[in-house]
Image 1 (cartoon, rainbow, N blue to C red):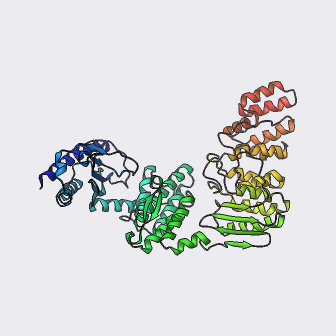
Image 2 (cartoon, rainbow, N blue to C red):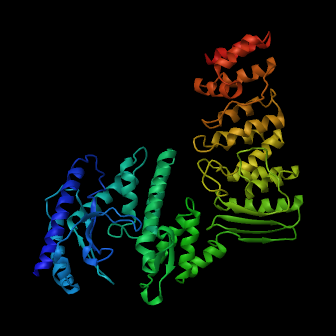
Image 3 (cartoon, rainbow, N blue to C red):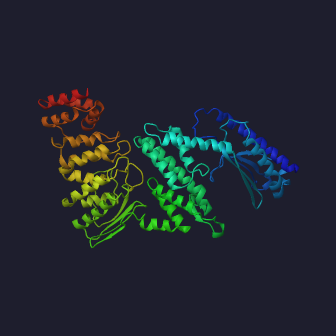
Amino acid sequence: MNQAAEAFLNEVWTSIQEIYKKENQRINEIKDWSQLQVGIKDYLRVAWRKGELNWANGKIHVDVHEPYSWSDDSYKYEAGPYIEELTEEILMQEFFPALCERMESLFHSTDYDSHFFNYRFELVFEFEWEQSMQCHSHHFVNERKRESLKQALDQFIETKIMSELPIRPKEKDDFFFAHCLVNPDLMEQKQEVIEPLIQRLSEKMRSNKERCDSWTYYYTTALKGWADERFLVKFFDRTGYYGLDWALKPEQDRQELKAEELDFFLYIALAMGNKEPDTRKKFLDLAVQIGSKQAANYVKRGSGRFENEYKSTQIQASANDVLQAIDIRIVSEEEAAYGEALDFINGLLREGFPKGYKLKLKSSEKHYLPVKKLAKSGLHQFFANASRYPVLYPKIAEYAELAMEAFAWYGDVEPSEKSVMPGTYAVLALGLSSNDYFPLFRRYMELVDTEHQSAQDDFAIAFIEAHGVTVENMPVLVSLVLGSSDSAKPLKNITIDRAELVDALIGELAAMEDYLRETVIYRLFGGNKKLAQAVKKESSPIKDKLAQLLALVE
């Protein structure tokens, strides 16, 4: 071997061994491995980065994991004068093949912890010359490890995914399972293969909100990773801030478009919708750029499963289930227009249109419900406008019954404290307008996710302002405070100063568990201590009734 190439190789190899020794000690300390993780290290980049003034005054850079384009976590080493003797031919014909040989031997050896190397490994070499860059890469595969992982995955699906509850995977397995699903070495990359497994585990996690959200994040991230790293890079170059945008490559630089890969990419684009609607739209637009007629139809008309347009003298409406969006233009501000709009939306929901849609409303009337935390969105405005017409209440109530779903969210705002469950605006509008819909109001409060939604904290204030505090509406008031989030504060300006009101409250609390009683007392009186103070201040008969109430929570 050329002496300069040999000196360079020895320098690089010594550096790699030093780094790997430290990494192996760290990996050896890990005890709780997932059965779907055969190893960690799957990437190594060795690079020569030229000096600022003289390319030969640069440094050797070693990366043991694939770096982000905007970061520099490389291990850096000095090199000897041999650097100036190297040529592109020497590097390509002598240095890199020798580095590959050593690396492949190490990759298949037992020198390190059994989990040190993954089953697949990529070696990258880059050398910066004064005016150019020399790049080479090589992949190694440990078939024994790959087959072992494939068998573990098959067994995992059979015993942990397809089995009946209460059997679920361990939390540590969720991440690795999600990434196994989008690994073509392990699974066919087809919607009919992957989607049932995702939905099966999602269903098993449904009763555990935190776990369900975590699983959704893992599989969404994995699907997005497949789109970015295995598909889009074949046709687009990364551009923009942090490389988050894509620019179409010249036609001659694009790889051949395979129908099965495009189909899977379109499936991923649609799967992004619930959590990342902007990503869904971006992916569909990118698919259009490479000639996908299906993507163009999705953007323009939706999936085709639903009536996507309605026009009359009263309204103009359109719907797109893929983009999970409804557009309503009120031509004539009157009862009939909102009635037709409600019929259009209700018909969509009956057919299975996504409940977490967003609505774009064009209306000259801008009414909103008297709750501070509610977003002033098109959805909010629509139901506040429609609720001005009592004859439409049955249609609004039908909408609420169709739309309400626990652990679901409208898409009318970015995920935030203003996110609300489908049906929220309709239920609130009815509950504030008529006592005929108090049972609906109560059902909503039983469904609402008190851990992840807080807009309902102010519903009780609006309810009291609309209906006051009476014996008849005490059950609704109690349900409103019980459905509030943990951050809800005591209600202000509420008066429970008659014996019959306290009796009604006692009747509601009698069958409750202690922690629920304490929640109600906190929201209505400010807590047990303040209720005790009220008992001391009042005179009979209200004093006696409040004492009975206090006895329930002491």
